[in-house]
Length: 212
Ligand SMILES: Cc1cc2nc3c(=O)[nH]c(=O)nc-3n(C[C@H](O)[C@H](O)[C@H](O)COP(=O)(O)O)c2cc1C
Image (tube, rainbow, N blue to C red; front, side, top):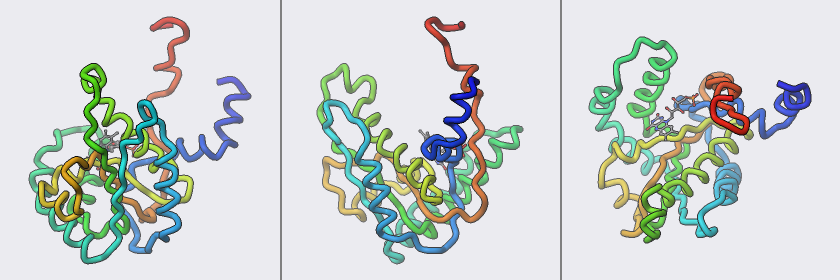
């Protein structure tokens, strides 16, 4: 990598946050301030969306009784979730699976639960085929992950709501045309957060033509 690019990566805070935006699923019980949560939702709502339609809504749960209730719904599916994980010999995948299982079993202990929802918009067929509605909301979710990391918080992109079943939208009071897309548990990380482990960028970068 050229010197200028390397220096940009090491000094720029956005790049620094992106390089350590791991999936954090073990949290300390310390509370997260409302201001920080609002900053995360601000970051989410800066994301791009098709024709700027901003099809998102964010339901944030911090109330202990409500978190416990949601935790019971998610954890009830813990055995099913564990059984669905493919067998692996790869230690890093195994660690990730163990951490995912921990989250499902202890979901109710998550200090802040952000349910990133989308309005079910009737996109033209060509748009719908490529999942445009979901993509927009995923952009917002990705902003939350990076913003959380930049504040020292931990978060993870999950589909935990799918484990909770149909009682969850009811519990959150979602109208019929609003559905949960991504569930982001947020809290102070219980341990150190290291850099992400990804394929080297130069292996997947193709200048002008694939393969070169
Ligand atoms: C589309 C998508 C779906 C994911 N679903 C889940 C999930 O349901 N539960 C979970 O614990 N993590 C989930 N993850 C997080 C990934 O497992 C995690 O990012 C990956 O294992 C790499 O780990 P790292 O980000 O800590 O490097 C998901 C990530 C993405 C992008």
